Image 1: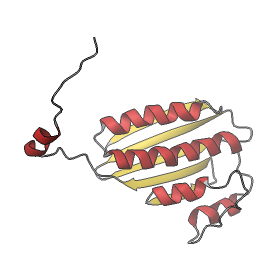
Image 2: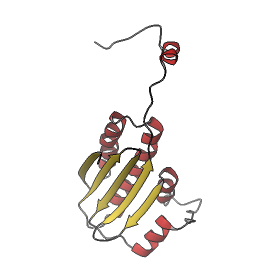
Image 3: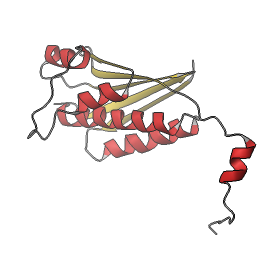
Length: 159
């Protein structure tokens, strides 16, 4: 088993950025490549925003992450009921998700999650949960020759 992370946040809009910041620090410090981190953070932000917006009577939601060699799995859950669980399951798991209208102000989050992650799933019981999985790669240090070419000629420090 790899790194396990869990945070519970109030169901308020400002907490989406809190979840993103805390998770971003964990992922970056774990040595995951920045492209994977960016994909994960955008998908998690969408799932958290949905939990806040559609959480119903839930006063909070949770973000859990498990990092293992080559994989990252995230679970975003709230205790509120999904308005139409069967429709959400279809949108998360169908081969072709319906596109929102051009004038629609919402409805793109699930599409983004599906595009950015390798696996996306939805569970309606006992909590409303979005499960996101992504194959991740590590940031491989460049060779010494590459480092010498990219090294700046001047160095700066904040005092």
